[in-house]
Amino acid sequence: MGSVVADTHSIVWFLHGEARLSETARSAMRACVRNGDPIFVASISLVELTYLVEKRRLPASALKMLRVALTGSSFGFRLAPLDLLVADTLPQVRRDEVPDLPDRVIAATALALKLPLVTCDGRIRASGIQTIW
Image (cartoon, rainbow, N blue to C red; front, side, top):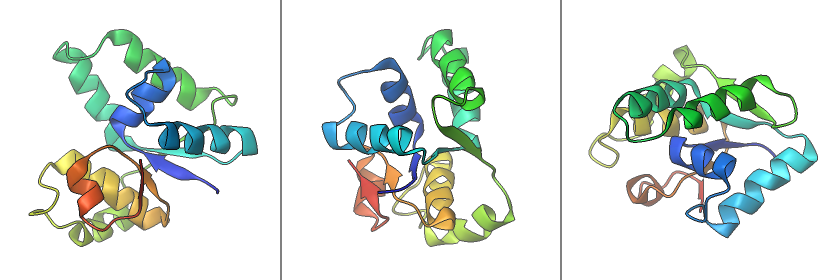
């Protein structure tokens, strides 16, 4: 299958082994780890996760686990920067279809990298972007 980009919730659910992650999504992410293909994490996901921890919507352990996954080679996670390519790709993710800016940046990251996006977000999935769920 190859690499994927995973959105913030998919990353957290995968790392915590939560049942909310669909079996298709879990299988795709496990295949990446097994085959040595990176699971890309949009840099804005790290920022978004920090924000969700600060608002106490997620435990601090979620942020710690992501940091460990990004620095440990056994997880296969790689940070994808918010760079000029992603910024130039952002208009392809229409604001009327995906109104939340972090979600648009994550989707634009997947488009810029030409990879499917692991997401349960219905708006992103309905927008025509290649997704796995």
